[in-house]
Length: 101
Image 1 (cartoon, one colour):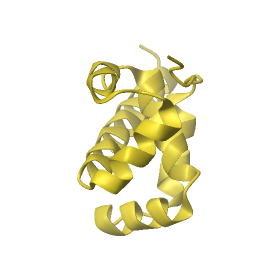
Image 2: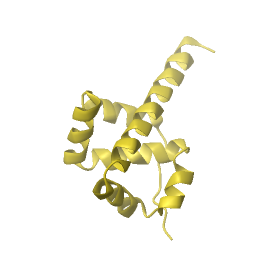
Image 3: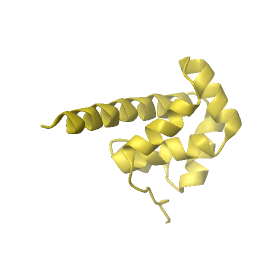
Image 4: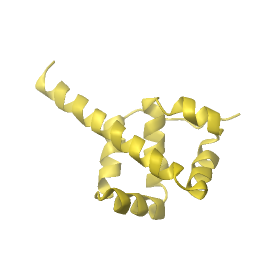
């Protein structure tokens, strides 16, 4: 593995961990969770299935970036710069499409 690939892989892994942390933060409060479910069109069962998909994790970060209040609350809770969420979203790449029933 080339040095750039190692750095890219490490950045992606860190981004996935941040997205999982963001998903956990969202799931802590029913209002936040319902907002994510409404925005994605997912059911709770489908959310559990999707949680391991990198593109879904990118979608979690997109959802957070679209709601400044949520973003700032998460950044404060995680003691991170809100811009770290945008950097993590970019590191994950791909596009997550809403699950339409």
